[in-house]
Image 1 (cartoon, rainbow, N blue to C red):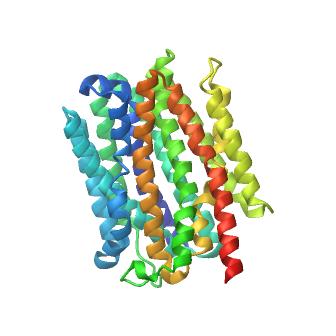
Image 2: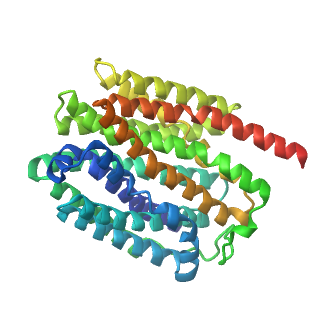
Image 3: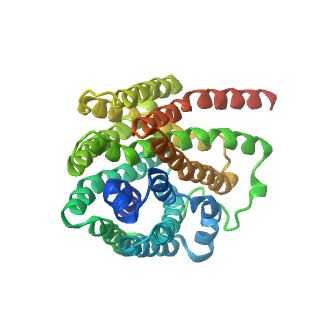
Length: 390
């Protein structure tokens, strides 16, 4: 019993390194853009590029784990994350920064797809829901740590030193996983070592195309918010360290809300209504952040409301995928997620440039988040229709 929880600790630490590294560029964005001569669209591209490799590597990630072992592939991913972090800290051009960011992003994809599967191997039933919610929270926790550490360090010693800490975090994750993680003797609900798309039925394909969108839209909205809020707050005259501390507070509240949302949704009779209400409230708080009022109350409320639907959105594929199609289905799920989350921050950055203000990026974040409401409704209608036909 203790072993699986220690394994969860190791995998959660490794995944937190992903959030830490993803947020690193946005946290010191004013320094990076000045030093490398980037506009906001290029900044948005550099931020989103971290997730772009998922479009190619998410689906075969399970195959690599089956062929070489989950733990080995995760460790290889952490090595790439560390290498990419060091390379980015030494980059002197936009092209070199792209190459470094791509390297670390490939490693992050290898890690992300497999740690989810490894936690599923160790946990089952309601205990799995708890374990998955903890694993999911590793992402915003890593982001929060980045906001607290990288911004002040970048302001004190230069953005390169702040970015270099991502390599240290990845190396810590490597050491922890290498020392602690062991595969279970029997992996419950494990898929076959050969994963093919042919195992997915037409019904599963259709539901995946719709059911993957809420998680994509939800995460894209969150990433746009945390990517451009630092620059927007600096634009309003706040210091970069203070701006980072404000967003770190929002992230801490968000982490609490994700766990609270898991408990609330488990007991709620109308889970979709909870999700719709929380999303509408989150969007309202994002719009309030664009007003000249003090941002602190809106940041706290945004965190409390924004974190509630996370467990519901990420669990949608489990509602219709069979055990034998779960590996391929989750590969498609993550591919769609990565594609949208890589592109949408760049679009938000372009809107920032065109408008000359971070308000446009926050408006886009609110619109992206609100799209979860009709998409989830469409998913329920489609699922009910397909169930009635069968």
